[in-house]
Length: 300
Image (cartoon, rainbow, N blue to C red):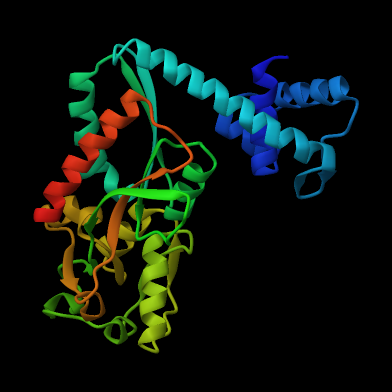
């Protein structure tokens, strides 16, 4: 039986949609549908209930889903084992990260990694904090960089560094004249916030509840760039980490002001891995370099 069928089936089962699986796999929907049909013919069962809102696994599909995940995981482990026999002459690492850590944290670390190990390839996926954790738990990622994630017994934190949340606005905004702002202060102006899949939003909402503050954001987005753009245009403020806006601040397009509620307890960016997944030599080397980079942030 082709592993391709299991791979296509597993993606459709995970996302509940052939269209979504097609986008993730970069494969035509017709090819995925054909492989699913062949699996159903081979096992003589229906694996999905076709619903108006997508595909739902049948009882038989649930059984096959668990086995498909195990088979694909064993395949990845075998590949990593063979790569390890060859040292770091080849290999592959899958990294999922929040958007704000790509430019100044992930990119320079990967550049150094590829200088040392040019034959090792890497996938880098930009995602929300919730999606990064899900990728680690579902074996889609070797390493995850996320913002202040909740504790999870299946996740190990390899390193972390503080990432205080700051009020962000254009230099010409009226709020830019302040030395320090509070969450109640920020309700005076239009504000853009990340959506609820972002760790930043979880932290902001928790602090707002503790301060009895209610935000009514003018813009909610899953794009850091959209939030920066809102602030750059002078439309209002947003709340982000320094790393997320460093370039715009250096260019004089944005300015940042501390928020008093986040001075005593700064949230953290964390480098995570799944306890259930044994990293290859390539993964261990990249994780070590990321840990070194995090140590520099810790000292700064």
